[in-house]
Amino acid sequence: IVLQVEEDNPSAIQFYKRRGWEFVFADPTCRRYDTSGFFLKESRVTKYAMIKRLDQQNADQNGTREASNTGESLMDKLRNSFFVSK
Image 1: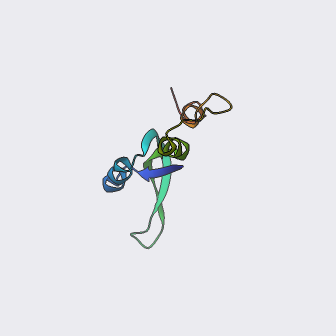
Image 2: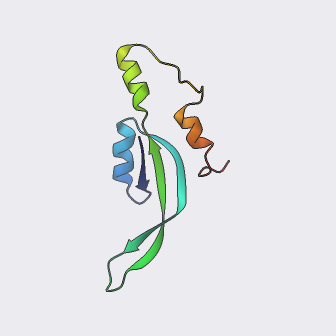
């Protein structure tokens, strides 16, 4: 499972970290709408992508680990995707 958390929400970041979510990358190009005034304004915000692998959790509960068919983990696929800069 992959989710995004805004960087100005440290309590949510800590919440997910305590529950086993891992940081994958930061996306500084995200935008959100500021609704504090009469008109909507777009503002930039950095969002953190976090991942939690359910297959690993299930394998750990069963005491075995299953190898993936492709040999490349989901984490590797995300790191090698076009969202991640090396």
